[in-house]
Length: 295
Image (cartoon, rainbow, N blue to C red; front, side, top):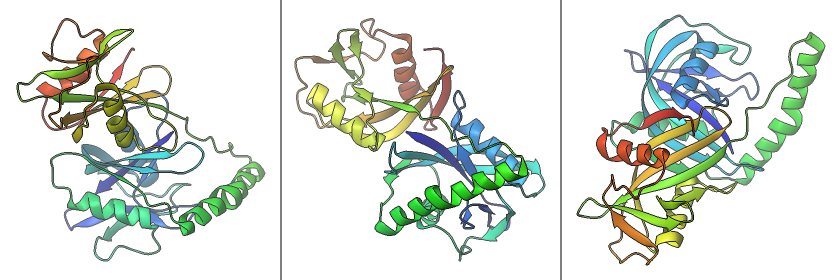
């Protein structure tokens, strides 16, 4: 799956920081593809500075959106940010940058960008939102033009100018886990060949992570989780594997015999990584944890 970040930064005049992209010539929030070993908050701070000259601080994650773009799918993290310094400047990727009114937003703008901005501006705190982008026929046609015509033309232009060719961001492996508690505070785990584990697993391509989290938890434990928040995002220090940990409440039916409610710090819980997931989910504040892990 391809992963990117976007940043919503509003100044004291209630104007939003936007770029006009050099490929589609549409207005959008600054952002870009996530590199291997890079945490999303680090990525969006870097992208904002590279594309606009503004030094930004990511304050909180407000949303995830999934777009079923062939062949792997596309996942985007949107952060609310604040300005720490810097001055506006353009870049090869953003020939026009500036602060613009939020109502109305400038045109032209892709529907997915407009929806991301409108949702992000309405988010005033609390749980992270997640949603799937509607994949219309117009969007499919636009994608075909973008990748098969426009990007090839840009590659040819780079070659003529002696500039480096465009390097696509890495394809990420996405893992999901669910931390689900009962009314006594115990955590649901399933018995596997590697010991007691949180329900979850690998996300198939072209599938939203939250949908996989629900379906795998139901298959493995017999319970249907009601996801409440994204508690943690974990990246391996080497490679491009990301683990998303969701919190959830159960539907109160008895779990399968292969699953058990256990104390959140039960010694039966096997790996150090799983211990991190549960501890961060149950003992930190409502902000999403981002961390690099060696495993």
